[in-house]
Length: 318
Image (cartoon, rainbow, N blue to C red; front, side, top):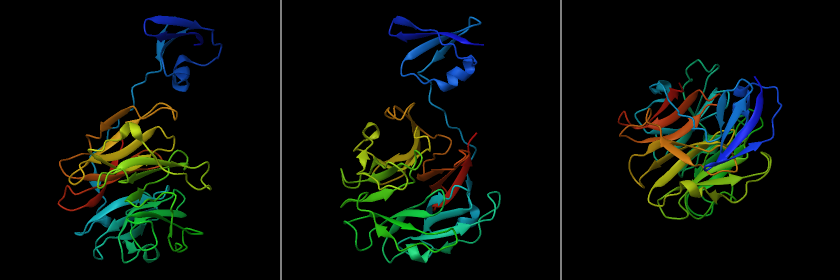
């Protein structure tokens, strides 16, 4: 089957574009062409397919399960994993308040994690939250109100030479921080865009920001508000941007109280996130937070207090 013509429809008018002589099936053309307009493609066999204006992907999940080996009566949340799923970091109050950063490892993704251990070199006597480990497990970001920052919760970064090495002492990342609360998240879009949450525009109401960089080895530029999702009457936090930059998982809720998991979509990096929906398979009347999607797109880790206290859950994508 060969695409022989392309008819682009704008309103009630139509323009017939020049014939496309690519020897690909119409299905392949449909998967490869992304048009900002409503379009129809006539194939050699007389069939007609519609290009552009695709419905965003609907995310459906299996029932979530507690990651039981990480559970504790004390608050446990903020999961972040290496891309190979062999190392998980999270925050927990099991050693006291404020929460500290913990780590658990396993030899294979199909196995349970070993007993969690404190990561002493990343912790302080102050607050640590929003821990983020890079896909290769060699860079680490966290939010902390320890001395040396710009004010409240600042973004701090640490590195290590290998997966078996200790982390360096965290250093402040002033390009990502402000005098308000700033929470880092995993860089997406091929590690070039970090989603952050900050209440720099309205105290106690977090909004989503993107901080970009030209390459993973370069510093981040000043964070910019994701204006199409902004709502100063709600709190938007915990953004997770996929590697292609087209899907953003995040959390929306009141300034204080239970929040829900959401996902927003766009068809191209040049477009705003134009479609957002709640993840109804995962949300409850309790608090759901901290979405983290595996590199293969098959598992979503998150936190919830649906059991009466905060635990880490994982759900498979259908």
